[in-house]
Length: 470
Image 1 (tube, rainbow, N blue to C red):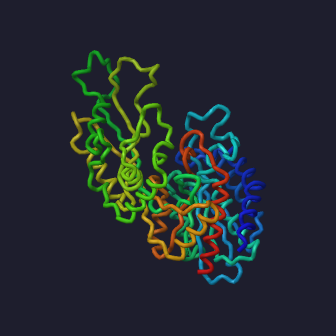
Image 2: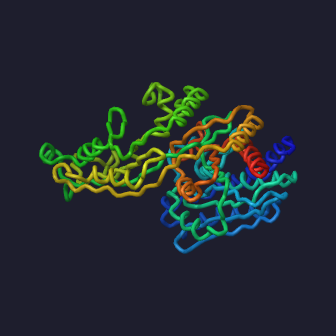
């Protein structure tokens, strides 16, 4: 393979085709079904699907077929197949991405917004470009670049789902009904992960599971005057605080429930040390801390493990609390909190969920009415890399990034990976992405770093070629 031609091909397609199409894609408010109950009626998801599918159908890829799979009551799925090329032996690669988006979030910089694409330098701002709109474009561009030079690649199946940000509730169904068409892939490539910086190819070695639920605490039938009732009637907020202390040490953030804790494999601890060495303080100072604020600790290795292999609790929402301007001297009847637990990759999420529910609901303080209801997704721990794949990733990173590949666990979740890991235990996995420092996928000012998108695309072409030649 002529790597200069590969780099040139990928850059041309990104500049002339991908960036303009992603710009149109960002304008579409195709929020994931969890965040838009009327998503089907609104039609934004269908518009995004048609935009991406239309681009894909035009690609100069021999034998490419595309189907939009849509069953009643479920989000759509773009399913593409590309036959083996150049005499590659019978085999299958599965490439994955998603096209649904997180909600708007507040705090976007002036002149930008979730549905307002803006190019600043070589970064495209707007919701969904990096998470994960670029995936379909990157996957097909890597295949087209190989075919343009006559380089063999295996049969490839590309799946672009539309419910990942909702926990991929529809994906298992589609995987099941499409099982015979998917086959048994020997390699899975997922383009929906993060990167510690923009100077290396980053390979995700693990993903945490997630448990999300609502804690409801009710003590009164209606609000009452706080001067009359406080000191006699317990605050529903204080009860909620008491309950949270059952599962988390509020001083350290340590989770107290044994069912949410897992041993950290030695190899993952060694990789965390490598990440700490590469990133240094940028491991944590990439986040928008206010002046004078600091992370939860000073040990960089422990910080790296804390975001990848240790359980955490975040309170991400609340109800029953009026806006400050509307808050009177009232003892409120009820407090509801949205709780998000991140669990280690190897923890059983169903067992962990039940432990949380039992702990929060047992013996409610003051006889309050307490409930915790939610859902959970499994984490994922990658199998050991085959020698050919480890060598391929290293070569690709040095060729296109000019530096070694780095291996890092991710603190987030991709439910599809745990499901695929269980379904295809013999497969090799490459999980990578463009979500680096400041890209802020679920928050304001999300951006896609275009040079990184190009380099990741070229690296995946290298891996696909090495997979066929192994």
